[in-house]
Length: 343
Image (cartoon, rainbow, N blue to C red; front, side):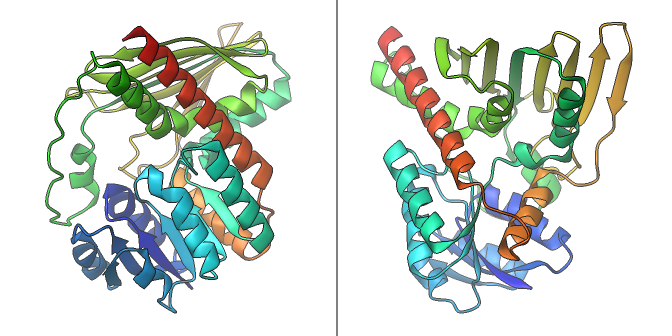
């Protein structure tokens, strides 16, 4: 059983990854939690029988830590990966994004490749069993992909935090609504939404649309959201991601239109651990086929993949990880530039 050090005391750690480790049946064990000074790490660690510290240095010095899971704010990811590699860690899961600049992404991949680090980036939809079924269907029929549409609407995440955890953590302080009339602020919001929300499904889109992306439009959506359109080769892509105030449960859907049929992939809310997405195939002759959800979700699958990489049973696709990072950063930068110039 490999000891895991969790960097970051936000909900991505305690409501997503810590429960996932417990579901893996003794493959990993949470042994250390580090925060950035918030004090939350101690309470999270106590709930899982782990140690805690402020900052990454104490975690990296812990001899029980063999695996590092980085769930800190995005601008810290690259530096923390490099620090972990320098400390001798050879198994790393980093939440998306890998880095916030292409130069940092390239530096991280170069060091991980040199050190032969087992590296997984936490875009969990890429590992979802339903995505494997969808790509198998597309490959088997050899249909030409014409368009891809990703629609995401998320209510406040604490609706799901309360479902999956009894941790009595203090709520995060409310953030003031950004002044979107300010061009620099609007551009920053657009970049953050692409890097934090849209990015979940960009590796999936790249699997289907391998051409060079050309942004055609970008606009902010109320209350906080973004809509993008771009083309990659002959494929048209539309993506919208919005954080709503309340109302219905999360809507997270990826639709692929080919010259033969349409695939609708409906993902469950991220925090509920309710299994995989479901896939519905609608054929031109009117036939509808529904592939039900698998018991495992993308979080379980990505950690199992990391375990296989650590055992040497699979190969780290460094070039694909870097290509995904470059694509996401380029798209975030393009959206920020387009929205900043319009504000």
